Amino acid sequence: MLAQARDVAVARMPVVTEAEMAASLARSGAPVVEHRGRLWTPTLPGFYRPVHLLARLSDAQATRPAPTAWGYQACLADDDARHADAAVPVHLVTDLDAFEEPRLSKSRRRSLRKAREHVRFVELTGAELLLREGYEVLRSAHARSGAGRLPSRRGYEAQVSRLGDPAHGIVIAGLVDGRLAGYTSGHAVDGTAYARDMVVASWALDTGISTGLTYEFFWACRRNPAVREVVDGLHAREDEGLCRYKEMSGIPLRRVPARLWMVPGAAQVLRRLDPHKYYRLSGRG
Image 1: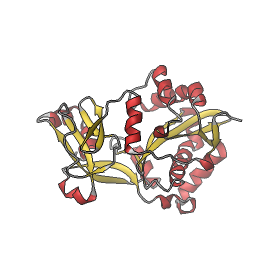
Image 2: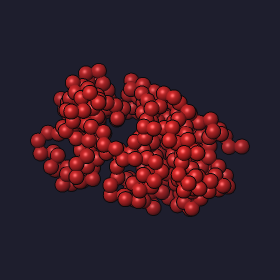
Image 3: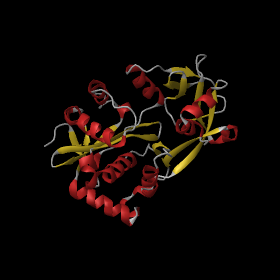
């Protein structure tokens, strides 16, 4: 038996409040500020977003959260959507009932059967397996995709050691012949669940593990009636294959009305230096 793991069939996404999420971020060293009753953190030095990233703020709340901020982004409540000057392009599921297995497409059910034939899925209840085998899986995935920056082993271990904190959410792992082949993780704040990582070793790709991890994560979210929607990442328009996979999996692209503000000239510089990052902040090309 694998220590610090349990049957994935009982996995249930914990939900924390905005204040609890902010406290967890503060414990990990992230700066948090309160502004008009909402809690914010810089996702880039000097650029702020709410700690609950898809929280729908009122027009009055979605204002500059700190005097030192050179920019901020916040989603807007439906009643104030008319004040939006931007949009957050996000893969968002609001109909979790659509993830009942009989309602999946024939091709998705076939992919899921393949995954279950080759992979054992579990919910991790502690960091032991990730500390032992997770970094090599991450290194394999990073070598394949080249996305982002590969953390140091020490940095990775510090991150996964937070497993067990409700604000850190859950980790669902897939094992092939007892060996860690991949995992996915996420957390939930005030009714919105966020898929955080999908990390799969290259040698395990043909097992269908990615499909299995995706759906097991959504079912863990469904088991908590407090979860009303699931976010599966911002729109990576530069990765057409990934976007197509999400659409085929029933995870559509939506544009959430938002407010984006930057000091004069900053938007033009960011758009020139990194147009894809600018697009994910603004919803504009």
